[in-house]
Every structure is written in structure tokens, then in C-alpha cells.
Image 1 (tube, rainbow over the protein chains, first blue to last red):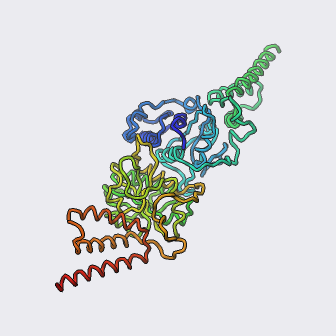
Image 2: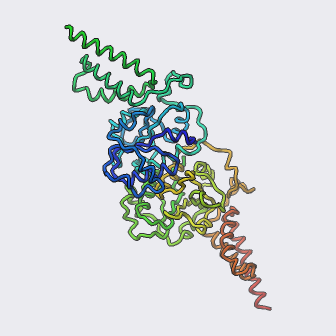
Image 3: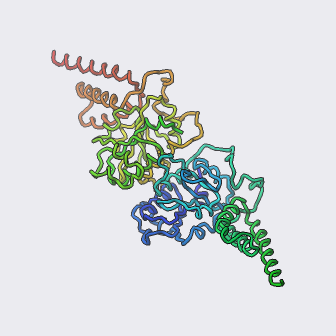
Length: 261
Length: 261
């Protein structure tokens, strides 16, 4: 059971939802389970804030944040969770089954800001969307019919997060941001935000290009992998300026030397 | 985690649903979580079987059973579970929180047939509907906005039933059909069906009327309580003819004596 103040640090993020009724249904489920922070990324229909399905969640929908990109929506978050089924793809991130998500979030530091990201109705989250996620949350649907309705998927996830689950203390038993050697409980240093990580990727890529690290034909693939990698590292807020500093130094050195040649 | 054969003994029953899109959404959630048996009681809209929202569940919707009354829909069931929130009423039945439902059903005998009953969109299950239920399943929604969308409520319940839950072996700690002294594990006698119990109520009421047990003004209240009581008794299949026999004997005696007076 997440306390109210823990629910307040969870953002529900809907990426490119097509049907406003689904946005309203997601808002209704949020109200049902006590969540308040909704972000809508690049919605298809301009009048989504008037969705009739947001029963009891009209204010929530009015106050929802609208962003143009997923990157903007999760910029302030320190843990970004993509949702979906694994029926048709091999995941590139660590996967956590939905029933284990609440104890996992509860163990995070109080300063953690969590985004729970849902893809559009037909296709779910793209590979590019997922590259912005630290973890994949798997909703355990039946292999014969894995694809859920958006509003129902939101309801199921928030139900699971808000409900009492018997304590699972043995941990996840798999790879994840916290499975490294660093013990977060001992560290007063909060995790890096998505904005930090995006900046880091940008500077690293600039460095890679400057040093001709990869053929231009490989750049898209590297870009994608780089997003995944920086999220797997469980960087803290304080790590980022250090690493940025290093790469900026490399860049400066390289440009300086190139100029002096 | 309910095995597939356990899911096959669970009927999803929708009482007087108004919006066919919600019926389709319920069917879709059933397909998502591997359930197949849908009953629709007295639907508002005649063309509900064509609901567009039943993505991946078109066959399930075509094969759904339609009945005129809830009583007919649950006639063959041995455990009838009403769903809802407890925000606006004091329950007359034992209540089980949704997170405990899967272990509870798993502990039932293999012969148990379970109905999971959902009320109509606006008002939920009526007091009369609930009188046909052995137990109430509480979906733990927020007190400020307890009322869920029908399709979302079905999704949340079936998710909880189909998902792994850590074992809860200490039992329910509250009253319920199995909390009496009879140990079901030792009994090869299956529980009574709803049809049995309805017949029993009918014969008992006839007896009550015949013996002028209650003023006619009290009959509706007694009818309601009687439904609740026979469901609380955890009668077995073999109990019913015995009790029926007794009441029929009383009736016969009374009519015989009345005639001979």
C-alpha cells in the first residue's frame, strides 16, 4: 500500500493517446485509486480535456500537463517505467512484473519521482519511447490476447500500486537500477533526473561524433543504446556533472587540438 | 495464480449493463487475463454482441450467455461473489478484499463454480442483487471517488485473480461460507448451487405463509433476509434435499391438518 504522499510522487504519462475517452478513463482510474498527476504527450484530439469518461476526475483532467514529447514529460523524473506486454518483443531493459512494482517503489528513496508511461492504443510504446525508460513493467496478460485497452491498463496498474500487497522482502532477484553494489539507503545523493541523463547522452554523442567514434550509419543505433545504457547505470544527481565534465573536457581538448593542427 | 482450469470455473456476470462498449471492454479484459465464461443479464441495448470494444474477444462476446435475471445467471454456481465498493452502504454479507480473493478461491474445492457479479454502470448492484451473493468483494478504491467504470472494474478483478499473489495461508480471519465448523477438505459433498438455495427459500417462504409466520407487511423483508441466511449457512448439495424434505413435510402436515379441521 503506497501512502498518499507516495502516490503524489507518481506521474501517469499517456503517450500519443488517440481516443479522448481513453484519456478520460485513465483520469477516472487515477481518481479511483488516489493518484493526481497526469501528463498527456502529443494527444491526437485537441479537445481531450472535455472527455466525458473522466467521471469524478474532471479537475484532474483540467489540471493535466500537456507536453510535446515524452522526453519533456519525464524530464524531472528519476525513475521512468514503461508499461506493456512482452508478447511481441524482446525487452532491452530489465523487466519487473506488475505485482512486484509497489514494494519496489516503496523501497526507493523519498526523493524519487516516478513516471508510469503508457503507449498509444494501437501500437504501445515504441522502441524510442522505451529507450527513455529505466525499467519495463510487465502486465501479465494472456499470450493469446496480450493487448489491453488503455484505460483498463491504467486501472490495473494503479490498482496494483494502491493496494496492499504482502511484503516481498527478498528483492527482485534480477537486474535493475538498484541491483548494483551501491547501497542507496546509505547515500544521501538522489538519483539523476531524466533531464540530466538526456543532457549526458547529448554530450556523449557530440563527443562520439567529434572523435569519429562510429560511422554515421551507426549513429541511430548508438543513440538508442546510449539512452539504454545511461539509464542502466543508476547514476545519482551528483554523478552527472562529473561525467558531463569529463566529456566536455574531452570535447574541448579535441576541438582545441583539432584547431591547433 | 489461478490455473487455466480454475479460470474456467469462474463466470463473469454483468447485471443490466447499459453501454455495449462496457460489455465489450469487459469481454476484452476477460480475453486479456484468460477467462472465457461471460453472462449478460438483461442488457439495455439489443445489439451488444457487436460491441466494437471487444477487441480480440469477438468470439467470447458471441458465445456469451444472456439471461433475463441474475437468479438464472447464477443458478448453477456454488459461490456467488458481488463486486463493488463499500463507500455508501453497510454490507449485509461477509466482505473479502479483492487482494485476498485469489487464494480464497484457490482453497475451494475443484467442483466449486464461481460467479463474479458486476452491477450496472450508474448504481452498482442493488440490495436484491446482493441477496443472491454469498460474499461481497471489495475493490479498494479511494473514498473520494469510489465508483469505477464497469470495464475497468472487470479488468482490475480479473487481473487480481489471474496474477501471482504471494501465498496467504492464514485464512481470511473473518466470517465466510467456510468459517464454520464443517471442514470442507474432509467432505466429498459439493456445495449447494444457487438454484438449490432459491428453491429452498421458496419452500420456506411458502411454509412461513402457510403457518402465518409473519404479517404480510413483513414478507419482503423476510424474503430478503432469508436469501442472505441460506447463503451464510454453507449448505452442501446433500443438505438441500434434507431441509427441503423437512419443510415440505411441514407444509403437507399443515395443509392436511387444515383440511381435516
